[in-house]
Length: 374
Image (cartoon, rainbow, N blue to C red):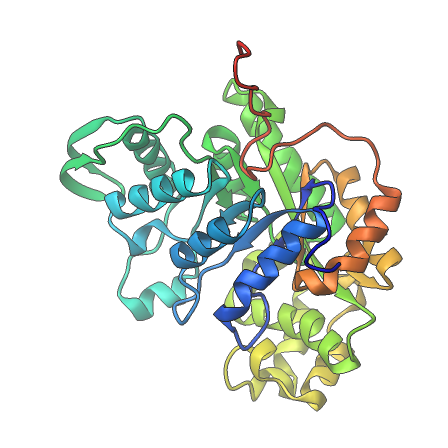
């Protein structure tokens, strides 16, 4: 699409991850977002890394350069900021974006917290910070808080938000999925979950919501699908598919293996590969061609079977199948908006009628038009 073309109708059920490639070039963020908005992708998700991917900064840019794009952190972590700083971040972005921002929180990676000297994130902390943030955004003053996230004499933001940001939980852990069903506005799952694991996660969230007395359909669930088109060169395809999966297996293999029911002896073979044992950092960022080919040979095909690969039509079909698993929305992970143009066009051609969703990725309730009583 050329810069002068009108905005395509928005597909609020689709999202992408901003700056998902290595090495990260933050200066590309704005042009990515403008194109995503133009072709009708619904939401830009921001993952945070402690290098040049600060979630608040990137989210602010996304809000400034787009007109209707939903924006969400997926994820940031509450333990890296004072509660007031996190509340301030969410409030500022909610106001700056005109209500398009959702705050996505997660547990993070335990080895990283050890390196940084920070405590691990627990489910009790996620439940507590979610409640505190909502109270702060309502304008409450909290005196003498002493709980799972720490002790604070006074917590007060000094503003009351008419439309506070929804809170998402980013997880694939059964216990955190249950927590999300009880307290969160939305859930972001994980890349490389099988179709069966995704359907199980959806059921876990919905059932937990119902047990908590909530409408199960009120929790917006996003699946995350690695999207690797065949227009990329072969090495790039291997890097984004097998290299990215291997990187996750470096950081948190146990939870991904359990979620999918994958065999431990298959993981042992992956870990014994030269590509794994000689890695000089994150595999998707550092692996060379021979190492990527080795990973493609040793990683079981079924581990990537439910990813969106091949032609734009094939990718669109894989994305469309996610909705049969009960999710509300799908993140096309690992591809830039320019790489998604043909996939989005192919998806439009097969898109089925579904309930309308708002641009805000943490909500299922469409805004009430001005002057109309809710």
